[in-house]
Image 1 (cartoon, one colour):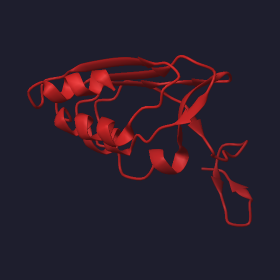
Image 2: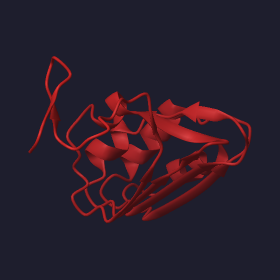
Image 3: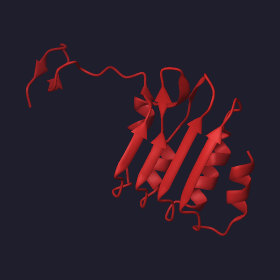
Image 4: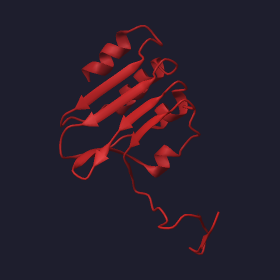
Length: 128
């Protein structure tokens, strides 16, 4: 994908903001992760959007565990399509992006309790 090739040609730790709209093609995740790693300490904003009516899973573990200066992460998923991450992927590693103030992340494949509290193994909820 051309934007990642361009980012790969730039000096290491230079890119601060990335906004990428993807059509029907898929993102080459190994290449994306390699390029993200080249700019981990400088990346402050990342926006990835899929512009068609197809759902496409994407891994964000490299971003969440490595982008220590990330302030905005925007990877939305709507009812009609877009990128999404699984809850397991989003929680795979502790997040190091402590400066994160804006988060839009489409998450799929998770079961969230309908009531607030802690769910026990037997399925009962306890208030916090």
